[in-house]
Image (cartoon, helix red, strand yellow):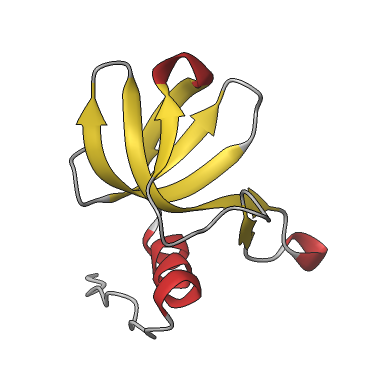
Length: 100
């Protein structure tokens, strides 16, 4: 986990959030554009929805460490969806080479 990276954050409440980490501070993470993860239709790709519906989303958001249970790198397909949802930029997924 580094500043400037998009990560998946599991809150103590069980909610899963994807956000760009702006700053790692004492006892807190400052993030940008947090979105909650919900199950996709028919077990498909996860859906992204605003974590807070009435907040000004272009401002930094504070997550206190006491509310976080886990942090992990975000899957590439979810990261691409997150970037498109929060910036409008359509980034192609990274391609990989499959060998024998």
